[in-house]
Structure formats: C-alpha cells, structure tokens
Image 1 (cartoon, helix red, strand yellow):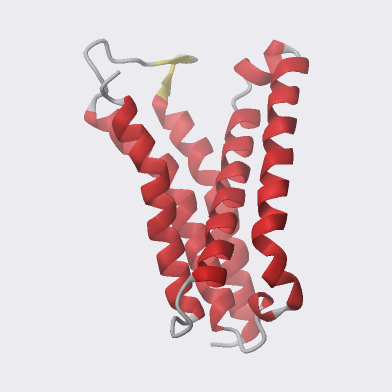
Image 2 (cartoon, one colour):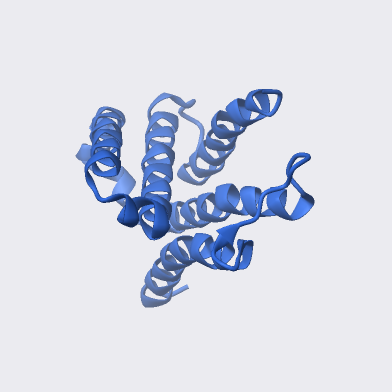
Length: 171
C-alpha cells in the first residue's frame, strides 16, 4: 500500500477511537439520564462497556500495526529504548492532572459534560497501551517481530484491564 493511504487510515482509526465512546454515550443515554439496571447490568450495557474497552484498543492496535509495517517506523528510533520510563512518568503526570482537573473544574464541566470524562478515558487508555507496548518491545524475546509485539501488547492490555473488572463484579 502507498504511504498517503496508510497515513490516512491511521488518522481515521485514531479519529474513530475518539468518536466511538461519544456515539455509544448518545445511544446509552435516554432523556438526559443514564439508564441503570436494578438487578445487574443488562446485555446492552455489557455491550456498551466492552465497546468502550475494545473499540479504542483495537484502533490503537491497528494504528501501531500499520506503523510497524513501515520500513522506517517510529519504533526503531533511539528514543524508543527509554519509552517505558517516559510513558510511565507521562501516565503518572496525566493521572495527577486528571484528578486535579476533576477536583478544581466546576462540577458542571466534569459531570454534566461527559466529553471531559471520555477524552480523559481514551487518552489514559492510549498511554497505558503505549506503556504496555513499550514494555513488550523492550522485554519480549528477540525473535518477535514488531507486528507480534502489537498483538502481544493488545492481549496484555486487555488482560490487565479485564482482571480487575472481573474481580469487582462480585462486589
């Protein structure tokens, strides 16, 4: 495939990852009030939860896979060897900023406008996926290709995010 098409596809996937939660929020909300099940989540709510989790992750994985297929990818630079530390520190800074913004912004911005929450969620999910991917490229066996690293990081990210959800479902 040619380079402009791959760049357009990557940009489209990133935009799609940001649009999916907004569209699902529009579908999920009825009359301005979020519907809640009294006896546990309904199948439609579980579908929306998994779409919030898997939709952006699959877009990130596809974007990283397309980047890995390029001859001179971003992952071959010298900066990439320090990426686990950089993404960890960046993630900590983002979480601190998220908490500070939620604390100091007016409640109308944080709670009534779900855009802040969705954008923060997708950004933190991207930083976590980037951290797992950088760890996978750093510590995986040498015979793994970059494409295999993207698949491994997707699986590890899903496991890291689903295990706490499964344990919290019993609470």
